[in-house]
Length: 358
Ligand code: COI
Image 1 (cartoon, helix red, strand yellow):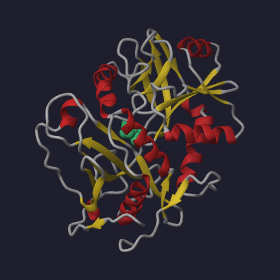
Image 2 (cartoon, helix red, strand yellow):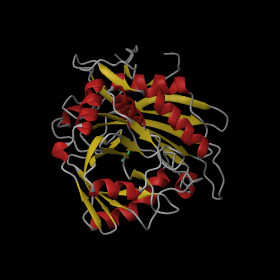
Image 3 (cartoon, helix red, strand yellow):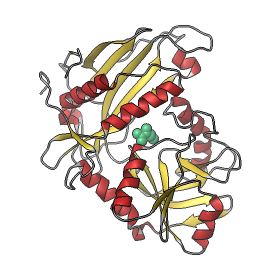
Image 4 (cartoon, helix red, strand yellow):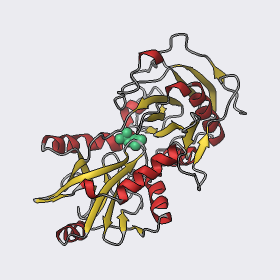
């Protein structure tokens, strides 16, 4: 580790109060967090400390004009109990791509790496080992200037904190193809992992949930014909001889799990196409019995089965018990995450044993 990192440990660990056999997603936080400040010129003040509230001015620019970006990554344990990270370098690359789009300062990759390793080493007992669970790591960067007026902030904060989590979806999901509201148009911020993308999804998602669905399947903003992604994950369709996922061309999130699953499936001999996918192609293949599986991928969702898609008055139901490709994708990524499957791609990174935290 080369980062000058100030570490203060908690004297009041919450670890013993957690039921690791029953962890809800997103509600249990581990003991420590990483914090850094951008002072207008450089990132500074690197520290790990007990998780605590921030004191934020009412005029904070992030709250008013939305300069807020985040990441989601996971730490797991190998079958021998060793703490592991999954493709951490991809997450700092994507965080910095989001930062560029949102006019925010990039964060130095080597400091991010040192921070993640040190924090996860410190929180290693928080990594659950039950099937489908992990330590979810949430880096978030936000504007910190106290001023009104639409402009980029000069100062920022980066925080990284962790949550032991179970599966995001514990059951197969039903989706409504959205034909009124949009998530992202070409030229917009759809590719950035920025808070506003999620805020914009809430109202249409609420309507979809009230209508009996679990989530929205977003369509393109011009014609409402081309599939983009689901509110919480990227999406894959397995037709008879090939798998298709919408191309990442600026309007969808460049999912790291999406990339992992494409690579896994290709290595198993499947054809995976990244291209525009028209809803008529989906409906036609469904009617002809050629659409075999639909599944979502994401850090939180991992690989999640889709059991139903509604598009206007057409309802497509899928028998998830017959899903083979989805099951293979899910078991492979889970096997990689505990190293019960050999990691041929150098995706899995053992957490470095850093003094003085281990
Ligand atoms: C993730 O998959 O990490 C996300 O940020 C999506 C969110 C639904 C939790």
